[in-house]
Image 1 (tube, helix red, strand yellow):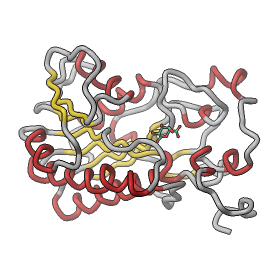
Image 2 (image 1 turned 90 degrees about the horizontal axis):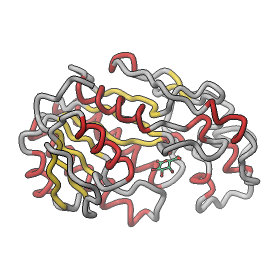
Image 3 (image 1 turned 135 degrees about the vertical axis):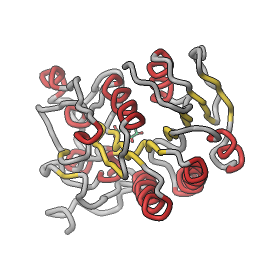
Length: 275
Ligand code: 15L
């Protein structure tokens, strides 16, 4: 990666697993990073990076952190399914603080959205980015809200966004579901870099999955406009992971997997999606 953003980049959620991956890679490429998280940053700081501990609930702190930034890479907030009351502060109100800061700075937002925005789509289908949200919990719902907030700020204020619907970004896939949902760290880093560096993005949606041909659920997104294509794949793990499934019909039927089962009170899944 030789391109450098013209202005500093604010990275929220810097102390989380993916925040640390992004910090290491983008920092090593010479990006000027302003890192923030509610938790301390556990690694050595790259040369051109600074870290400030802050809560997304603190709108003034977020405004200050974003001053002079050209992009906000927003990986902060709750990143797993939790009760509504735990999600609402960081992922709804906190996101509002991010977008208000982006509006003031004329900055772009790269939003860590999630496959859980569409978790209740059937695995038997392949879906396009423009297909309806089917959140599988309060977390997925908060990510759908985030994408909608991004569209509001684009239409009303001209704030650009890239919504990255991250699948499963781990060092390697660990079960059969991830033969479809796996996103390698390197593919994630390249995608975020393209999302920041591409000249105009409007509101773009990209499925955050590697080139997983053995099992594919997601198609038709805005990757070409960003100049991004994944280079890695879960396919090499197919032989060892195909049998690694649960005995839960809800989990195995839908894209969101185990998140669909959490607090699931229907007796059994319907005959077809929407039933
Ligand atoms: C996510 O959105 C979560 O942040 C992550 O912890 C995983 O659960 C991932 O989705 C997944 O679906 O595998």
